[in-house]
Image 1 (cartoon, rainbow, N blue to C red):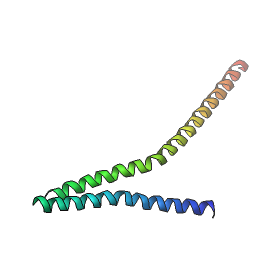
Image 2 (tube, helix red, strand yellow):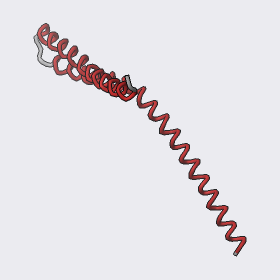
Image 3 (spheres, helix red, strand yellow):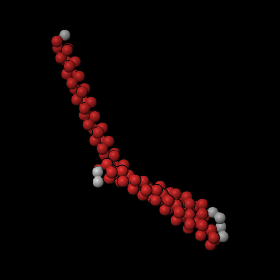
Image 4 (cartoon, rainbow, N blue to C red):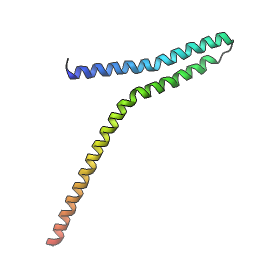
Length: 105
């Protein structure tokens, strides 16, 4: 299997896992809230548990994707360091040219 094909399959699986990460806690908490409402003869547990499920889904998605962000941030820091050093070397070269012109003039 080609590397590109593996990357596409990996991306598809990641999207699927992310979707399941959201849906599962929302569904489970909603079902729990519904049964709590039936048992206690109330009408607000479904809504409360639904939002608890949404928060749990966001938390799970964050922890799932945090590893990818960490890798990207590390790569961006390395690139920024390279460009900072490159800019400094360009400044040093420019200062050297200005000093040479000053000595000639």
